[in-house]
Amino acid sequence: MNIMDVLKKEGLTMNSRYKGILFIILSALCFTFMNVFVRLSGDLPSVQKSFFRNLVAFLIAFLMIVKSKEGFKIEKGNLKFMILRAGFGTIGILCNFYAVDHLVLSDASMLNKMSPFFVILFSFLLLKEKLKPAQAVAILIAFGGSLFIIKPTFTNMELVPSLIGLCGGICAGIAYAMVRLLGQRGQKGASVVLFFSGFSCVVTLPYLIWDFHPMTMLQVLTLLGAGLAAAGGQFSITAAYYHAPAKEISIYDYSQIIFSAVLGFVLFQQIPDRYSVLGYVIICAMALWMFFYNRRPQEEAA
Image 1 (cartoon, rainbow, N blue to C red):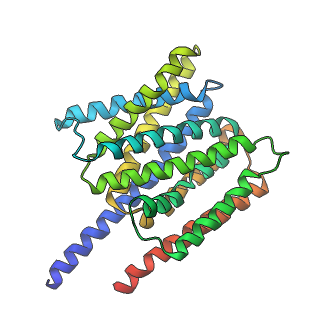
Image 2 (cartoon, rainbow, N blue to C red):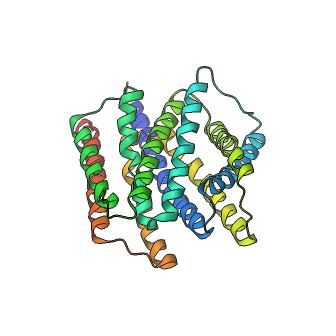
């Protein structure tokens, strides 16, 4: 291989990495607005909010597939991974929406942002990607940081919502590991979003029929906004993990905490307590450490 081939290959690699970074920051902004709209929609059940969020995403993905004229297709051997992505993704959304309704916005977002650590963990367990000792240590310390947000005491009235929020982060981690695997197996991103959104709508529809809560026009509009923001976030996060592995771009997902803290203060006058802030610092520090740790082999090889 001559020098031009090497430079061309490196350029393509860097370009793909930067696209992954751009998409993951865009997804963080979109998901922040999704959480804001979910909060603004009031005291509707989380399942009802999830249904309308995913219905909008489903329609957008459907229109994109129709426009592309490629059609919906599940590549051979990918169905079980599509179901795993959709199943855990649905549970993750329900948990996240419940946490958003019951916690400070930045607390709920940070617990959900434990997902990049769980992506690394489940990529090791399910995709057989190598897990280094330093990564394992970072996951354990980050989990310790999450305890400052959860505050696991019997006097903490927000303990249950916090644990549900953490469960949402775990499920999201599994779902995004499946997104990474599906990308490696040649599954189109729009098909992944369409299947996931449709699956979630079908799963939540029986509950919606059984216990539908009438909505005002404002609630309909806020849930429409949540759906549009979620679709943007879903397509962006799918594109991000298609372009680059989690270890190279996951740190940028934490930009959502900044977006959430600012909007939570401006719109809801929410200020996280000192223990939550300490948890933020610990988790973000571990994410930053992992980012530089994972870049070291690339820099040494350069």
